[in-house]
Image 1 (cartoon, rainbow, N blue to C red):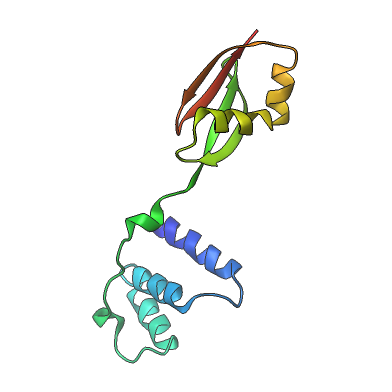
Image 2 (image 1 turned 30 degrees about the horizontal axis):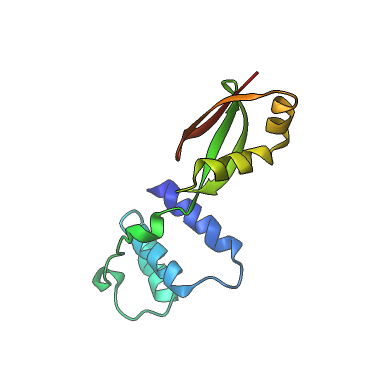
Length: 130
């Protein structure tokens, strides 16, 4: 939990002047069980009148946690030769097209015939070539 809050803190700091107030308030609420005095101080610095103990707890929204793209390993003859970023529901053809854009994959397949393509959606693309 602490590590995830540190990742959020670092992300918010990278936004410089454009930090959404709602995000900071949610972060303060999540910090409060671990550091209650610091949480209360930050809460009052944000201009809130009453204690954060009376504020509603952060709601989990699963749809915001779903990634649209994934990183997938590309193997040629069983050895990892690259990684591609593709849509979660990408078909084999889209994965192959992205893999063929990788220089290492192209170099391994240069002058070889592709014998078999093993594609496990969301997991891996393995190309067998001779």
